[in-house]
View: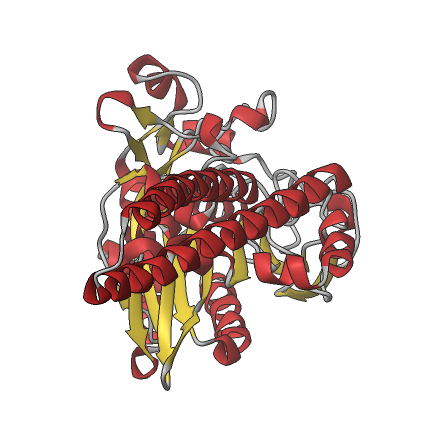
Length: 416
């Protein structure tokens, strides 16, 4: 959630920054009005509360001095009604403000370039050069079917479209990738955790998936639980509504989970293959830091994800996301895009974001800085999407006869 005190202090600056991200001026004006209404409701409540305290003292004096208390009792009772009314108005104003504020995205950093969509993102650098093929490279779904690694039709038979089943070396490679990524991340100082694949509404509100993206989530209605869209949700919310010590920070964690997304906003996109599935495996990086450490940890996370791809000998590039492509909770994001020769293009395989205080304010994650409690910064990033990494290996390591070689770093994990 954005800082409402900052909105109150400098509305014009906040408005200028959020309109860069496509937020309407009307929404921000409404937010400002609800913030003012809450301030007024608080002031009214405090006024009647102060009168109650004063009359309580006066009542004590009357009793000690033997004065008639009937008229004072009537005034106290009338004021008590006003206190209760003012408290209810304050509660309603708080609820209305928080409900609206939950729908407002994070303020983009000044370093984020302006742009409408992914076409306006800025390339930062390329890592490794794409391989030159002496033949026309195939796309991954052809290679998967030819080698018997992935069966898309049986995935549809078991569930619906955008599900698949891995067999043999395809399944073994997925497992090898997960173990390799977790080991690599641990070597970079990220502590491995294992978390539930189901979370409650509060957890998804804490990291910003709810209320805005509910249509993309799989929900278990009878228990008000949701399948996770990313491990970022349960790992970040491990520390929901807690006050950490400064000495504990930074907390750097990595987790493997299956992830589940309806992809409601992606109808017609990537309908073939494994690029956009309803269920997929992912290894995630999450960090909780002091504000002055978050940029350093962000660079570490980007380097960690990029270095995994380098170790796998997969060409990729780093991209700075523009305002039109920036995620709801992110202050700034670097995407890592892997080269897919079958598609002759780079495709996103990791997205590393610094949300600063945005998620911490929603999830109430703080740390004690001396005598004060301050908001932490939270960061998250894929390291990496397992299915897309498998796709990249298939397309980059394919041979002319359709067979696929294995990256050297994975051979120990496969026993070959």
